[in-house]
Image (cartoon, rainbow, N blue to C red; front, side, top):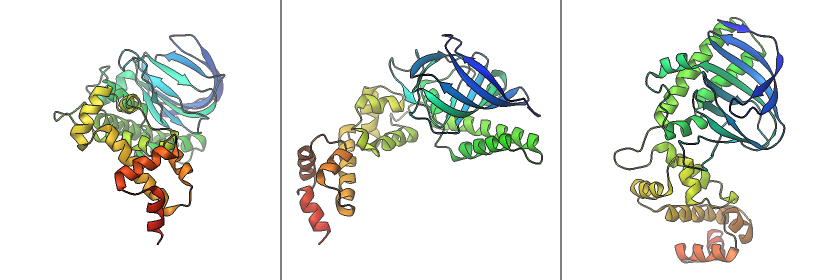
Length: 303
């Protein structure tokens, strides 16, 4: 049964470092779980080592942070590897991590799930989390069912209606099952054919859709997939038949054709938008691929 608690302000302390930030929250108890809606204020950009010894924590961001946070599971991921924390993220019990926070205010819905209850649902994770499962848990935002039900959970806590306690309990149970299924589906290990999983390819494509931030390095793409650079080169070739470099270039030029045909952006702007430092480099790459200059292609499309 869901039981509300009075709103309160509390100090959140990192178990491993003792650092503190302030948070005000309203909480409900659902069985042995606790659901909180809170507003946290990070005083400044900082790295904090955090450890949840007895509870899994499911986090849902109700407001967009000024800048994304990042996380690293030291000793499990390659040294120095950080992944972006999604709008929805699970932080497993017993898995210490470094959180890299940009500072500033943020409103969150947090579900604190007892380890025994969560492990009873999974059956076999029970503390044995792989690097890929941890990466999948770091960003659950691509799952619409999880997002929608967490939003409903937040709304019900803020404005309870008829049979609110039963609904909160049912929504939490649904979300947990969806989370576990998502991690199982997306956190698989490299398959026997030595190819990338679908979620890994999706991570690469999502990053290549934003080339204005710069052309990603092999290290960045490998990190987003939870593997090393050599493994990325090998498995990407086995999966797509192309090298990573060939694919990145193809994506750049495919986007270039769209910009040239459908916009009036100057060539310099298009080059920068696609991650080229100099328009001349863009023109050379385009001509090498298509046998004509970007200007000729644009003129021909508009005849």
